[in-house]
Amino acid sequence: METPPPQTESTKPTDADIAAFEQQLGRPPRGLRAIAHRCPCGNPDVVETQPRLE
Image (cartoon, rainbow, N blue to C red; front, top):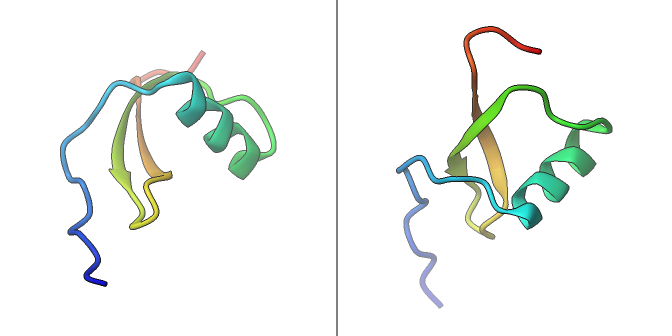
């Protein structure tokens, strides 16, 4: 089975993305603007935040 290349375009975060990222951080994300990169399994691993966090 061939692994597809990771997604490199920023995408709008879904509710599932926010929940996964919150679980990774152990707290709600602040200033989340977009998902910048996903791991090969599809989970968000890099996020784009607003310049000034709330």
